[in-house]
Length: 313
Length: 211
Image (cartoon, rainbow over all chains, first blue to last red; front, side, top):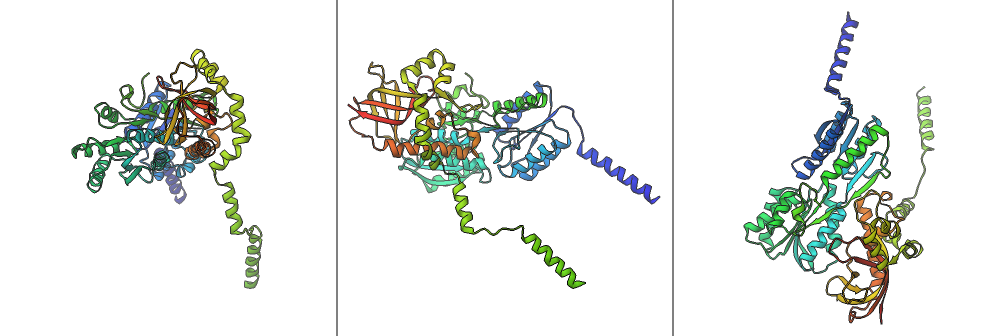
């Protein structure tokens, strides 16, 4: 009696575990995991990957980790549990993600990284890396040129926990600090956010009315900054962003923001899915694990050709 | 019994201890420093032995390189060019330049001279003379360096920057800044595929100006 009861319990438990772990086991599934879609850049990645995966006959599981390493780890478990054939991942941190990608590998699920790299090789099958540093150098060179190599400027940083915030800032200063007459009067984080970009810019402007330029770690903060500057009647201040969003394209075309750099979010996500498909069907890996995707400067000269993180020819 | 157990524990501890090795902190630090990424040393250590020989061997005259880019871009890339495999960076070509300086911009920190090669009096390319050098043409022209051997894009970028720092300190700083226009210029270096309508942006590794 006691034994049978225990057995039924075990059976029930196993059935329960099975259903929670595999609510819908798909034979041909690709998981697409990125940061929050609030930022159009990550949305473009997810859309690009999903479209390509469907074209190639896969089902997709689109998830967001919100830059939270723990959440990312759970999502990887979900992907493994659902029997994903591959994971397309824009990861939640160059160190914290190594274990998560390794876990997927150990479970037989290959990962294809896009945008951000991890500080380890041989764990993911491929890493298609946005060259944020090169992009930042490009943006900074344009910024310095627009400023006439001198003047007071403000830097708006991204969220501190995000590696790319640091990479972009480093790339900016790598260039700007070669010009001794460029003086940074304020450097603050606006956490990638447009509303924070606006409020930070308002406050900074009160304390430092004598500024000639603002360089922002991404486009949403640049959009916030230009709105605050325009509200204060400061149309003379040069603003440069980063990402190449359609919002900033429109601002450039109407004489607001002066420049940004575009990362090919859509194209690199599609490339990762193609690599995953080749690996699933033929077992072939790309020749090199890591490849760098360079950024392209966007200004009044080519802004017209920009649409959803891609330049038309 | 208790004594025996204590002895056994002690013995186990001793056995465990033999797995340890004492390392002086100072040695550890020295070792870490030796292994730490030092892009300036990587560049200066390979400049004479690898960088200059590679570019000398690879370079064609500027006329030859640009003519081949125009007529057969693939052949030009094969013969004079390099780019990171799989990456989206443009090709960067090795070339020698012989011409006359027609304009000089020395007020900018990213100073340059424009050089006429074919004698029509119009500039055919722009040669960076520092101290600030845009881009990473030198790193990108070299076939023996590979992004995949670097930890991440930060190290890779700093390595690129170190080429510019090195060439500025050892080659470009000695150049005169005045009366450049009209002088002859001889240089070996590299330039990335120019955007349409723009002059090639050439970064030298050796340069002489005079006459």
